[in-house]
Amino acid sequence: MTKKLYFLFASCLLLLISSCASEDQVASQPFVAAFEQSSYNYRDIPESREMLVVFSQPASANGTVTIEIESQDANYGVDFATTPEASGMIFTLPIISGQRNASFLFRNLVFPFNSDDKVVKFKIVSIDYPGEHNIQGYTTSTVSFGESLGGVATPSVGGPNQGNQVYVDLSSDTFTQVRRDSWDLGFYCGEEFRIGLNASIYMAAKKLDQTNIDQVTQAMVSPFFAQVGIGTFDPENMNYVDDPSGAIGGTAIDEVSINDAENHVYLVNMGYTIGTMTPV
Image (cartoon, rainbow, N blue to C red; front, top):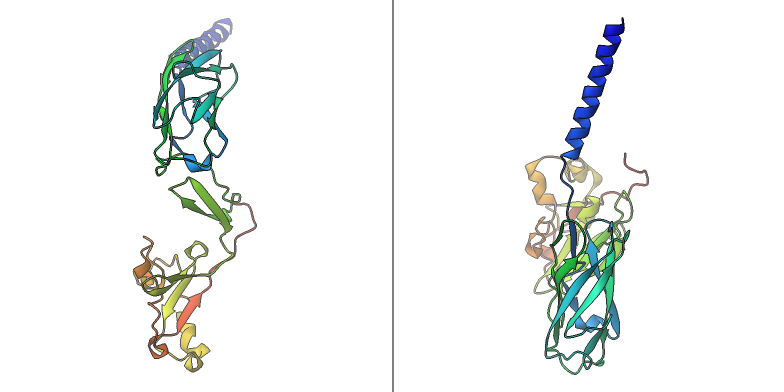
């Protein structure tokens, strides 16, 4: 009995030692710093804007990030400035233990704008931090009057049922949120008149042979109720939905004609409302 217990204890100890050795072999991840956004529009900064340098993990020690400034048609102290103040177009930000980011203030000193040629670029040139560290991701961030070069957007989708639609303006990094069941049809008035369906709530439409709605009866359309929808896995249903690419010429409803006699009646599946139960 004593030998068996000893063998069991020794086996557990060996397993414990092996497990610890395996965990010790896992390489730690380097500390990485980058700008939160790669660009900002000068027009959106009439006075000042906080700019973030984000970290890949909470800082485990104190350190510094050194940032260099390059400018075009913009003079430091005349057209713009920073807090903290730069010396020789260079300034440093503190890395504070426990924090996930550092920030500085970009201050626009000329408003209304007297030129749209101004460009100010910030570049992370070095990190003073104990342990392994890297500069990755958005290593530069530019303030200019040009189009946005990209960034990170965190719109509110309205919870687990994603009740919101989000419309993004890529030129300015702005977005507009609307409840996705608050509308049914979208009207396009460009070179041709088109009507779009709200696909986010599974709307669909089938073109009927009739052009006079008074001639349409329940008996005529009831056989199509099960067909006109989304998610039926029938290739024919592609005719009942708008082109997924968003091409305006691919709407399920044909171009609206100026001649009423050419406009057909459509059977429209109005889709669904947003669910209230939390998905599992």
